[in-house]
Length: 206
Image 1 (cartoon, helix red, strand yellow):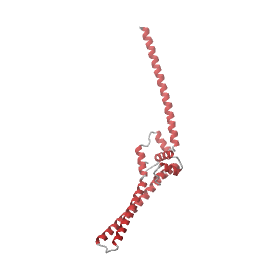
Image 2 (tube, one colour):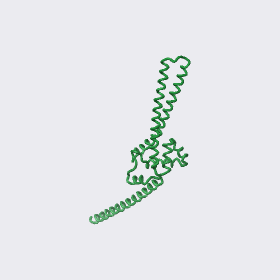
Image 3 (cartoon, rainbow, N blue to C red):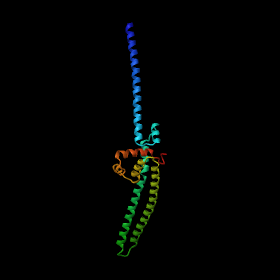
Image 4 (spheres, rainbow, N blue to C red):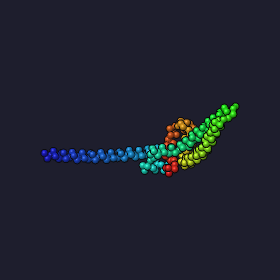
Protein backbone atom coordinates (compact mmCIF):
# COMPACT_ATOMS: atom_id res chain seq x y z
CA UNK A 1 0.00 0.00 0.00
CA UNK A 2 2.85 2.35 0.86
CA UNK A 3 4.59 1.51 -2.38
CA UNK A 4 1.48 2.32 -4.40
CA UNK A 5 1.16 5.70 -2.71
CA UNK A 6 4.79 6.49 -3.51
CA UNK A 7 4.39 5.55 -7.15
CA UNK A 8 1.18 7.67 -7.34
CA UNK A 9 3.02 10.65 -5.87
CA UNK A 10 5.80 10.32 -8.40
CA UNK A 11 3.29 10.18 -11.26
CA UNK A 12 1.55 13.27 -9.97
CA UNK A 13 4.85 15.17 -9.75
CA UNK A 14 5.71 14.15 -13.31
CA UNK A 15 2.31 15.29 -14.54
CA UNK A 16 2.70 18.68 -12.84
CA UNK A 17 6.14 19.11 -14.34
CA UNK A 18 4.85 18.18 -17.79
CA UNK A 19 2.00 20.67 -17.49
CA UNK A 20 4.42 23.41 -16.43
CA UNK A 21 6.73 22.72 -19.37
CA UNK A 22 3.77 22.63 -21.75
CA UNK A 23 2.51 25.95 -20.42
CA UNK A 24 5.91 27.56 -20.87
CA UNK A 25 6.20 26.24 -24.41
CA UNK A 26 2.75 27.55 -25.29
CA UNK A 27 3.56 30.98 -23.86
CA UNK A 28 6.79 31.15 -25.83
CA UNK A 29 5.01 30.06 -29.01
CA UNK A 30 2.26 32.64 -28.42
CA UNK A 31 4.87 35.37 -27.95
CA UNK A 32 6.56 34.40 -31.22
CA UNK A 33 3.25 34.39 -33.11
CA UNK A 34 2.30 37.76 -31.63
CA UNK A 35 5.67 39.23 -32.57
CA UNK A 36 5.41 37.89 -36.12
CA UNK A 37 1.89 39.26 -36.50
CA UNK A 38 3.00 42.63 -35.15
CA UNK A 39 5.86 42.77 -37.67
CA UNK A 40 3.53 41.84 -40.53
CA UNK A 41 1.03 44.52 -39.53
CA UNK A 42 3.85 47.05 -39.21
CA UNK A 43 5.13 46.23 -42.71
CA UNK A 44 1.61 46.42 -44.13
CA UNK A 45 1.10 49.88 -42.61
CA UNK A 46 4.39 51.08 -44.06
CA UNK A 47 3.52 49.68 -47.49
CA UNK A 48 0.15 51.46 -47.30
CA UNK A 49 2.02 54.75 -46.73
CA UNK A 50 0.27 55.46 -43.45
CA UNK A 51 1.56 58.50 -41.65
CA UNK A 52 3.62 58.15 -38.43
CA UNK A 53 0.68 59.68 -36.56
CA UNK A 54 -1.70 56.99 -37.82
CA UNK A 55 0.79 54.20 -37.07
CA UNK A 56 1.19 55.57 -33.55
CA UNK A 57 -2.60 55.45 -33.11
CA UNK A 58 -2.63 51.84 -34.27
CA UNK A 59 0.14 50.93 -31.82
CA UNK A 60 -1.91 52.45 -29.00
CA UNK A 61 -5.00 50.65 -30.17
CA UNK A 62 -6.56 54.00 -31.08
CA UNK A 63 -7.65 53.06 -34.62
CA UNK A 64 -10.31 54.83 -36.64
CA UNK A 65 -13.76 53.35 -36.29
CA UNK A 66 -15.98 52.58 -39.26
CA UNK A 67 -18.25 55.42 -38.18
CA UNK A 68 -15.39 57.93 -38.18
CA UNK A 69 -14.23 56.62 -41.56
CA UNK A 70 -17.70 57.09 -43.05
CA UNK A 71 -18.05 60.55 -41.50
CA UNK A 72 -14.92 61.68 -43.29
CA UNK A 73 -16.20 60.34 -46.60
CA UNK A 74 -19.52 62.14 -46.12
CA UNK A 75 -17.61 65.35 -45.40
CA UNK A 76 -15.55 64.91 -48.58
CA UNK A 77 -18.61 64.19 -50.75
CA UNK A 78 -20.14 67.59 -49.89
CA UNK A 79 -18.55 69.26 -52.91
CA UNK A 80 -20.00 66.75 -55.38
CA UNK A 81 -23.42 67.00 -53.73
CA UNK A 82 -23.27 70.79 -54.06
CA UNK A 83 -22.34 70.47 -57.74
CA UNK A 84 -25.32 68.17 -58.28
CA UNK A 85 -27.62 70.72 -56.63
CA UNK A 86 -26.09 73.43 -58.80
CA UNK A 87 -26.79 71.41 -61.97
CA UNK A 88 -30.38 70.84 -60.87
CA UNK A 89 -30.91 74.57 -60.40
CA UNK A 90 -29.48 75.28 -63.87
CA UNK A 91 -31.84 72.72 -65.39
CA UNK A 92 -34.80 74.25 -63.56
CA UNK A 93 -33.90 77.72 -64.82
CA UNK A 94 -33.58 76.42 -68.37
CA UNK A 95 -36.95 74.69 -68.07
CA UNK A 96 -38.63 77.86 -66.76
CA UNK A 97 -37.13 79.93 -69.58
CA UNK A 98 -38.38 77.47 -72.19
CA UNK A 99 -41.86 77.56 -70.68
CA UNK A 100 -41.86 81.36 -70.57
CA UNK A 101 -40.71 81.53 -74.21
CA UNK A 102 -43.36 79.06 -75.29
CA UNK A 103 -46.06 81.03 -73.46
CA UNK A 104 -44.94 84.30 -75.03
CA UNK A 105 -44.98 82.81 -78.55
CA UNK A 106 -48.41 81.31 -77.96
CA UNK A 107 -49.87 84.64 -76.85
CA UNK A 108 -48.06 86.92 -79.31
CA UNK A 109 -50.57 86.67 -82.25
CA UNK A 110 -53.43 87.88 -80.09
CA UNK A 111 -53.99 90.55 -77.52
CA UNK A 112 -52.43 89.38 -74.28
CA UNK A 113 -55.07 89.00 -71.61
CA UNK A 114 -54.61 89.69 -67.93
CA UNK A 115 -54.35 85.97 -67.31
CA UNK A 116 -51.61 85.64 -69.90
CA UNK A 117 -49.66 88.53 -68.37
CA UNK A 118 -49.88 86.88 -64.97
CA UNK A 119 -48.47 83.63 -66.32
CA UNK A 120 -45.52 85.42 -67.90
CA UNK A 121 -44.90 87.49 -64.77
CA UNK A 122 -45.03 84.35 -62.61
CA UNK A 123 -42.56 82.62 -64.91
CA UNK A 124 -40.21 85.62 -64.77
CA UNK A 125 -40.43 85.68 -60.97
CA UNK A 126 -39.64 81.96 -60.73
CA UNK A 127 -36.65 82.38 -63.04
CA UNK A 128 -35.32 85.24 -60.91
CA UNK A 129 -35.77 83.19 -57.73
CA UNK A 130 -33.96 80.23 -59.30
CA UNK A 131 -31.13 82.49 -60.46
CA UNK A 132 -30.70 83.92 -56.98
CA UNK A 133 -30.67 80.43 -55.49
CA UNK A 134 -28.14 79.35 -58.14
CA UNK A 135 -25.89 82.30 -57.33
CA UNK A 136 -25.89 81.37 -53.62
CA UNK A 137 -25.30 77.72 -54.47
CA UNK A 138 -22.30 78.56 -56.67
CA UNK A 139 -20.72 80.49 -53.80
CA UNK A 140 -21.38 77.63 -51.36
CA UNK A 141 -19.98 75.07 -53.80
CA UNK A 142 -16.74 77.00 -54.28
CA UNK A 143 -16.34 77.50 -50.53
CA UNK A 144 -16.75 73.76 -49.96
CA UNK A 145 -14.28 72.97 -52.71
CA UNK A 146 -11.67 75.27 -51.19
CA UNK A 147 -12.21 73.75 -47.73
CA UNK A 148 -11.95 70.18 -49.01
CA UNK A 149 -8.88 70.89 -51.16
CA UNK A 150 -7.16 72.45 -48.14
CA UNK A 151 -7.81 69.27 -46.15
CA UNK A 152 -6.59 67.09 -49.01
CA UNK A 153 -3.40 69.15 -49.33
CA UNK A 154 -2.65 68.42 -45.67
CA UNK A 155 -2.06 64.74 -46.54
CA UNK A 156 1.67 64.19 -46.93
CA UNK A 157 1.72 61.42 -49.55
CA UNK A 158 1.32 62.65 -53.14
CA UNK A 159 -0.44 59.54 -54.44
CA UNK A 160 -2.92 59.62 -51.58
CA UNK A 161 -3.71 63.25 -52.43
CA UNK A 162 -4.18 62.33 -56.09
CA UNK A 163 -6.65 59.58 -55.21
CA UNK A 164 -8.67 61.92 -52.99
CA UNK A 165 -8.77 64.64 -55.66
CA UNK A 166 -9.80 62.19 -58.36
CA UNK A 167 -12.51 60.73 -56.16
CA UNK A 168 -13.96 63.80 -54.42
CA UNK A 169 -12.94 66.85 -56.50
CA UNK A 170 -13.02 65.48 -60.04
CA UNK A 171 -15.87 63.21 -59.00
CA UNK A 172 -14.77 60.02 -60.77
CA UNK A 173 -17.33 57.46 -59.54
CA UNK A 174 -15.63 54.15 -60.44
CA UNK A 175 -12.47 52.74 -58.92
CA UNK A 176 -11.37 51.16 -62.21
CA UNK A 177 -11.59 54.59 -63.84
CA UNK A 178 -9.62 56.22 -61.02
CA UNK A 179 -6.96 53.52 -61.41
CA UNK A 180 -6.69 54.17 -65.15
CA UNK A 181 -6.49 57.94 -64.69
CA UNK A 182 -3.71 57.58 -62.11
CA UNK A 183 -1.96 54.72 -63.94
CA UNK A 184 -2.16 52.35 -60.96
CA UNK A 185 -4.06 49.16 -60.16
CA UNK A 186 -7.60 49.30 -58.82
CA UNK A 187 -6.54 47.41 -55.69
CA UNK A 188 -3.74 49.88 -55.01
CA UNK A 189 -6.10 52.82 -55.57
CA UNK A 190 -8.42 51.48 -52.86
CA UNK A 191 -5.51 50.93 -50.46
CA UNK A 192 -4.27 54.47 -51.06
CA UNK A 193 -7.80 55.77 -50.49
CA UNK A 194 -8.07 53.97 -47.16
CA UNK A 195 -4.68 55.29 -46.03
CA UNK A 196 -5.55 58.80 -47.21
CA UNK A 197 -8.79 58.84 -45.23
CA UNK A 198 -6.86 57.66 -42.16
CA UNK A 199 -4.35 60.50 -42.61
CA UNK A 200 -6.90 63.18 -43.49
CA UNK A 201 -7.74 65.86 -40.94
CA UNK A 202 -11.27 67.23 -41.26
CA UNK A 203 -12.81 69.95 -39.06
CA UNK A 204 -14.49 67.32 -36.87
CA UNK A 205 -11.46 65.00 -36.62
CA UNK A 206 -8.50 67.23 -35.75
